[in-house]
Image (tube, rainbow, N blue to C red):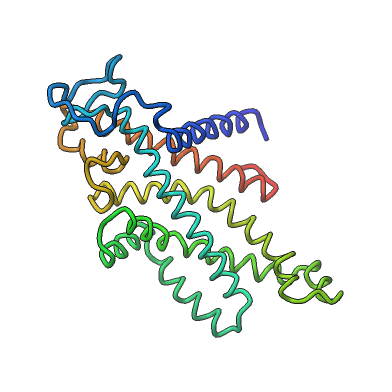
Length: 270
């Protein structure tokens, strides 16, 4: 890895570490109560007391960004983890099942992949209704088809590998050979893809919250904060800009780490 890429990876890991710290222990980084209102201190610009300014209700924007990391990142991580599990299960089934089952599963998967993930998530929300739990479900179902396809391809490829065939010749049961020699390779490939997928899930969850389909006020959440400041953007730009920066940095950092890990796993650098 070149020094430039090493520095880029270090910066991305540092950003993700800071975001995870804010998501796990927000009280260590916040300076105010994120839901405490103060009408007399509404729409104050960034200052020494309020680093990111205040919103229409006088709430500290910096503290709300810190506490919002827990919900935004939490939904992204949860959705990605469940989507990975679903993708691994369905993809492995498609890769080992009889042809008619494989064809049926992959045709359904192809239909889902034909639409943008965000559109699929909107359809799921339209069926289930708004709410933070339904947002997580919607993002999960929208992200799962990518993992299903990769898991199927990896399963079918590894099943025909020489070491797997050798294990079967030596008398290793089919199920044991799959667990020992096929499953680890599938999990490794999906894990690298999931690192990139975390950023996409966070972006999708924030987008749904921006549309008013996720958490409701006064919950601190990045997408909801973006929506809350759009009507006063010319007067108080900081209400939307800082949560937008938080979303951008988190998504870019996760994507950088994921792409560098994928390049390393494939034995090359891009």
